[in-house]
Length: 245
Image (cartoon, rainbow, N blue to C red; front, side, top):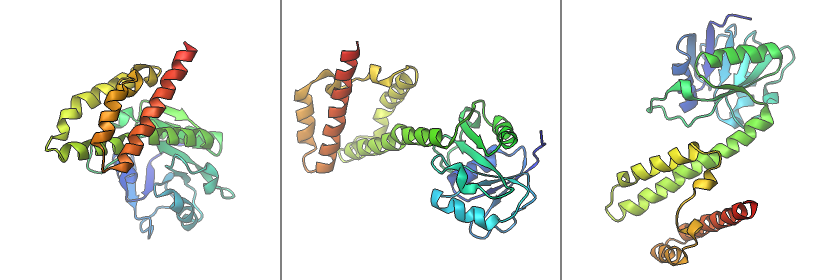
């Protein structure tokens, strides 16, 4: 198998910045996606870490290269990189990244796809230098994983933002929720089915508390709608689980 030495990462965002740090054992360069100044087209691997809509444009700008070209997207199909004679693949880290937040890269799952067996092996080899968990996943599986991660990450963070807003308007620090949030996530990841450890007024069918909360949210119709939608979903899931059992 080819020995990988030189990796260029095209991008300046959160994912590109963290991959630059994570791949520090290689000769790695961060490349401006707008100019591609300094791009080594003879590098071993070129990672495209830009917005999904810009991946093909950047790939086309690279032109002919002997490098393996791989993007880091969970939703973009591998075929967007397809060119005659080009070695290409996907190098997708499943994590939420912020430049200023340190991360234990060894715990990040990487999902790899290669246009051919040899390319896939090389990309998995590089990912294994970073992470303890490396999987093979085709474009369809990655799309499913990405959608699930939106529920698990983006939607949860939005709900936490609403919680913070409610508390701050009443001069209560968001930190009071930290133990609850930590325990909630801990329970969810330590079970085969997070629905089985659901708590709260909706799963108990406590309509009195639900009604009280709706009254407290008067003046915030969007939050009322979201509260009831989630409560109804919890109730429906509870009833489905009862029927199965």
